Image (cartoon, rainbow, N blue to C red):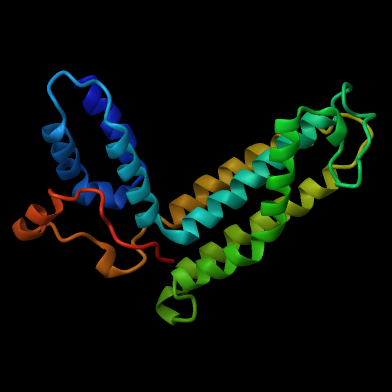
Length: 224
């Protein structure tokens, strides 16, 4: 396996597993054929197209879920960082974030943005998942129940992180909660690892393949 092929396969992971099984080899072959001899890295244009295409296939529900998970991991990691002895005595400064005035500007901005996302997304994530799985239909109750259970776990982590965020002392429990947020992200990705609609599954007939080979990363609009 060449370096270019290995890196293209890594970029293809932007797409969900079910999509890679259907079209992964076809897309990889198209990318390798279109690349000049001796190239070791995919072009910026191809990399951008693959990432954007993968996000389109995964949909808004996955994107919102991952933003929520990432925000939870950032906030819990920040709380541990800010309750270490170097920052425990810093002022909260009206933001609700311990040690806000003591950290670098980049850390402050990241913490504020993550806090805003973390607080704003729980309800949209829950609703988006129920819409994605058509939770009002009896045939979809199992997937909807799995989604509701994962969402409840996220809500519990949300409250637990808030409870552990109060000084004094180093908040060691935040490390466990941070790891739990990352595990929750894996669970949400697993639950969402099915096409939102049957029409999303690519047609692998010869005609469709010929058309797809000209635009391997064009997968349509975002969906829930």
